[in-house]
Length: 478
Image 1 (cartoon, rainbow, N blue to C red):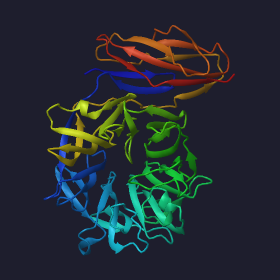
Image 2 (image 1 turned 90 degrees about the horizontal axis):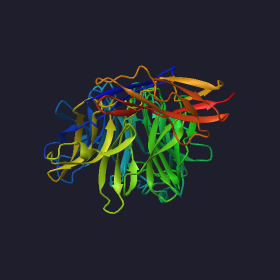
Image 3 (image 1 turned 90 degrees about the vertical axis):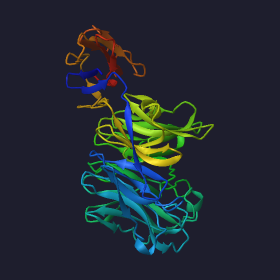
Image 4 (image 1 turned 60 degrees about the horizontal axis):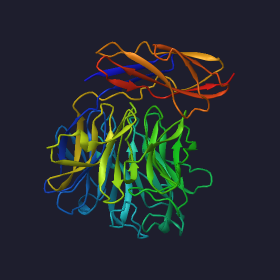
């Protein structure tokens, strides 16, 4: 397998690209004894997977951690007093801590179903730490909350009721909802903090956080915003490290949710188009929201909550077919969307329906079907995955010079004899003039005056294996 190392130099960008799509082996995470269903939600860089499983057909789902072939039952906040209580685990972080949404033994006094298990029990966020499950507080006046993710600093994010009654909530997509809800984070001391919605909005939810403390989710009105597990919201939001909410834009539609953010500040999520089809998107500070498209025939193509983009820019998710409503697991490598089922052994017996998390080693956790049962899985690449977006400096550069040299001479391949081609990419405001585009050092001349010029490098080795760099946007402002 040939690995091409692309470095567009001059201090502008560095990236690795793999010239061949990897294959995966699939591990069945199983179920609790007696169970027939499990779900894999998230995993950490050590390959520890968090999720939920039942212990009897049609029985309640209970949070677990899987590691080294073993499922660890994390329990529920209902304890032995509530054998029918449900819970689900997200995370874990590097320390093995887990964010959990769990029912309690109490029936909600307002008949709400905040966890959406259909039981109408009180739902609370919790953290599993040092072998103990601890409930997290709600905002003042609220009866319910849910925890959806945490980072290596033990900061947990989710959403909580705020005690403000709103008659429009029940029509907004959250069944039986009475109170408004807000995005929140809990610190290492389990203290709760509200994240303000965008100006003009009244509710919000948070579902992803990186190690810098940046948080993502959605905000809107209670009449048009629904909390996970079936989320909807008009505005995709990034809360920066100081808590400031940033509107990430849209793709022409009214349903926009930011699902995950990596430590480079890259955000992925789902956004509806004018025709109502939900596409996946990638947002960066430099480029804004970029449409990653939809799987052919799909009405929904998204990276779900909450760790669906790793620090190498690799993305996972799922697509729902518009005719059969069948779900398939997806992976985006080097900007290319692929059905994960095409990358596993044909005789594996698996059908992978949702890829819900990817770590920095390229391992993927999710949900699939094997022997007629729905089980959590861990997919492990049989060869190193590409580093498709390891950008060391911004892709977006502003210069006042009339020309600029891009140096790709550090590009390498085991096969050697690299050929270079710098290309002008459509989409820039101005077409650039390239001098010596087939040499390791090409000169970009901004012959059409001020504006943005987009360039991309393609290298090809002696075996005909090619790889592309990310697009470089050069802003000429004399």
